Structure formats: C-alpha cells, structure tokens
Image 1 (cartoon, rainbow over the protein chains, first blue to last red):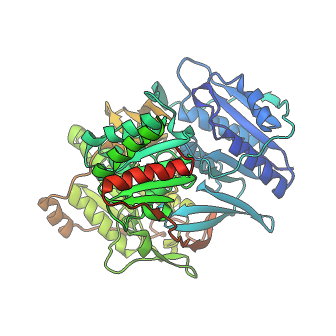
Image 2 (image 1 turned 90 degrees about the vertical axis):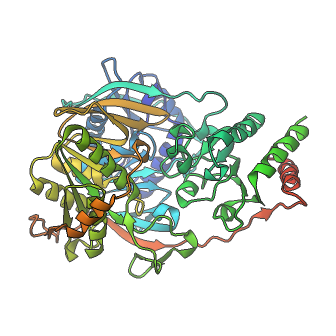
Image 3 (image 1 turned 45 degrees about the horizontal axis):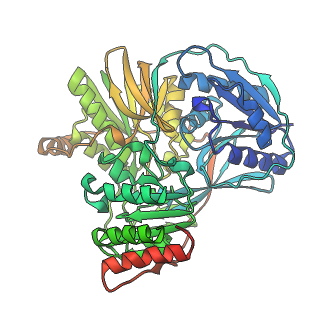
Length: 326
Length: 263
C-alpha cells in the first residue's frame, strides 16, 4: 500500500522546528489518501539520536542515513539519500518543508524521479481521491490550486502554514538504516557557516518581532529597530530591500525568500508591505504598522496602525513602553 | 568560460495588489494597462554574475528564454546589458507549458547551443515563485546544481566556489564544471544597460526556435496542472491610532498594545 514519505530537515544535527508540522500533515494525508504508512527519511550528519524525537512527534517508521566524513553532506549526497528512500518506499506523496536546503532538494528529487512538484504550499486537500495543492503566486497577489498528474507527488510546505497536532500516543519509531548508493561527487563542501543570532530570540521562533523597511532611510537609523527589540525581548527582522541594500545581514530577511515567521506580535517600521514581504508574515497574529503612507499595503494586514513620520512616532512609542514596563 | 543564462519575462512584480486581476476562466493574469512585463529580477542578477565572470575569464554569454513573442523584450534587454547572443524558444504549443515542460524545453535549447561551462538561472521567478525549473534543467542535462547562491568565487576553467544559502547561514561549495547555479539577489547589483548596449540590442537578430527545432514532443503532457487561479479579496480592518502629534500617537500605540496584553 503506497503511503507518504517525509524528508526531515536535520541539518546542523538537529530537527528543524517545522518537523512537527511535516509529520502532522503527512499523517493526515496518509489517512485521507490510502491509509498507507508514513515513513520519515532522516539523513545527515550526527543524526542518530533524532529518530526517537521523530517517534515522539508521531512518526511510525524512520529511515536513517548517517553521513560519514568530516564535512557536512553535500547537496548531491542529500539528493542520493532522498532518491534511494523514494525508490524503497514508492510513496504516493513526498513532503518536505519549504525552507533551507529542503527547497532545492525537493525540486531536484522530483526531476530525478521524473514526476511533478508544487513548492511552497499553504494548504493541501483531498478531493475525489485527488490531491489539490494551494499556493500563493505572484508574490501572494493571487492564489493558485494545482494537481500533479504523476506519482509520487512532491510538495513542499510553507513553514508555519500547517497545524501541528498533539500526538495522543507517541510511538517508538521503527528505525531502519538506509545505505546510499555511489553518486557523482561533483560538489565538495568546503565549509558550512551558521550564523548565531548575536542576541535575543531567533527570528523563526520569536513571539515578538520588530521589522524595519526601506522607509527607515538608511542603516544609520537601524538602531531604532534594535532598541525597541531589546526592550521587548523581540527578534529583529528586515525586508528584502533592506537586506539587499546591505544594511543588515541577509539572515534577518522576512518574506518569500527569507524567513517565514508566526509571532504573536509583529511591529513594522517603514515597511510598505510589498507582497514578497507579506508572504512571510501570513502567520503573524497581530501586525502593527508604522508608516507615513496611509495607502501602504501593510495597513491591510495590520490590526493597529499609526500613519506618520516614524522618526517622531517611534521614539515616543519606545519611551512610553519603557514607562509601562517600569 | 561559455555561460548560458536563462531569463523569464514576468508581469511587473511592483504592480500594486489592488491593481492585480486574473481571468479565472482562462487561469491567466490580466496585465494592468500601461504596465509592461519585465525581466524576472533574479534572472537579472544571474545575467550580471555571468557578465562579471566573462570580464574575468573571457568567453561568451548567451541568454535563453521560453515565452511568447513579448519575451523578446527580455532578451533584448539582456543584450543591452551586455549578453553576446540570445535565443528565443517560442512555440504556441509551449505557451501554457507547465514547469516540467519548460525545464525540458530550456534544457533542449541549451543542449542545442553546444559547449557550455556554466548555466546561471535566477533562483525563482516572481510570478509562480516555484524555484524549480532551473533544477529541472540541471537534471535533464545531468549537471550538478547549487541553489540559491549568494556569491561566486574562484572561477576557473574547471570549477567555481559557490556560496549556497541554507537555514541560518551558508555553505561554501566547490563545484566542478559544467554546472548550474541558481542565483539569489544578494550576489550583486545588476547594471543598467549602457547606450552602446541599447544600440546593439536594436540591431540584434534573435533566432527563434520552435518545439520541432528542439525535437521536443510538445504533445507530451505536463506533470503539473493549474486547476484554479483567483484573487483573494482582503478587507482592511486596521485600527488607526491618532493623536495631536505623531509623538502622542506613538505613545497611544504603546498604551493600546498594553491594553491588548501584547506587550
């Protein structure tokens, strides 16, 4: 009975925070499509201890491929592992998270398997036995629904767009080693650099985020964003315009090509709300917009807004918050 | 170094969402009057990277695009920026090609061009944001692929070092050529076409290749089917905080957030 293959992101020797969404959606789909099994591929370096965590999340079966050598595995190694797992499991559906290295792995895998793929899905549903995949297109200005005519159907899930489900009875996952066939090693990993957030919470997990846009005028004004973030114990985010201009590190980018975030509070300063940015904050519960243009798109997504010059608004806002927090 | 750059013409991504319309029956975008389509932003970064590699190592930069007659404008712009040659894959049978068919057609065109050391593509196109066609091209051509790339270093006839963006950082990868790289916007600032380039683009003869020229079976069904395209209407429900001065509005915003127990 064909089932669902999930490819977990275990880069850096830990499971991505989105793994629970992946396992939850995989189980739901398997149930709706065929009742087939859910298998998780766990491939990477220093991952042996993680199979147990996958069981806690509800995974029944885990294929484990441990990379040897001193360097992190290359994209080709990850692709070879995924291809091998797909050949073994022959699933109906392959799911990955639309983040980090999983994005290009998913596309390369689909073409290797000569099947179709839809990336960055925000919803999946089964209609008459067929999988319908919803995804925003044109930067979020329109919504498209796709079907994939070939098997397996490969789909990447937008982070934080899917519910995680509480696992009633955590399993001890059945673990099976996966050996990876030889592959053409045209890509050599020289080094991997992981940027640690200098201080404060990580953007993706933050409950409160302060984000700045081009409306701030220049890098010399960025400290207004940082001061507010420090006061609220918030993470700092930025638009693509700001990271492309080099004011701050690209790792702070929120949006379609940056981080997808889902904080309780998302405060924007000088952000107009380009669709590419909005795509990254659809999970934010409360958006606050400070912008001089009353017609800016960001106000459509905001719960609270102030129209005016941020240079006059933000210092008073920060000062009042300091008083309130004593 | 012989480099092929793939470019796509897309609706201007700066069309305000309020002016964005689709034809639901035809499942296509209705271009707003007076807004011309543009070269996909990431593709411009890929072309700029190619031009800089050519400045360092010599060689030839060829741009390839799949699209209807209007896609010619994107190719002209590429020549104006400095590309040596362009090829337009244009066939009514491919007009509504899905991503898998597009990858197959572009791979066939690159193969027909002959010797190539490096294929550079944008990491994704701003219309469908799929980020998959370039990886499909690599699979069809049997090339190693790295994406998304924020820097290209140490180019030589045998290899390049590519910085691939991953979660919370990047990897430095030595990639043997020939290879394909999916380029991200961090890599450079695309140049504006110089006057000399614009004149060259005016004179340029751009060959058009059909599905038959590429020995493509255009009847072969795509693997991905677009079933529905629509615009979600969104009503603003923002509560605007006002005051006698901007500073007062700022302070009131703080009070409001405290009231709502958000801070």
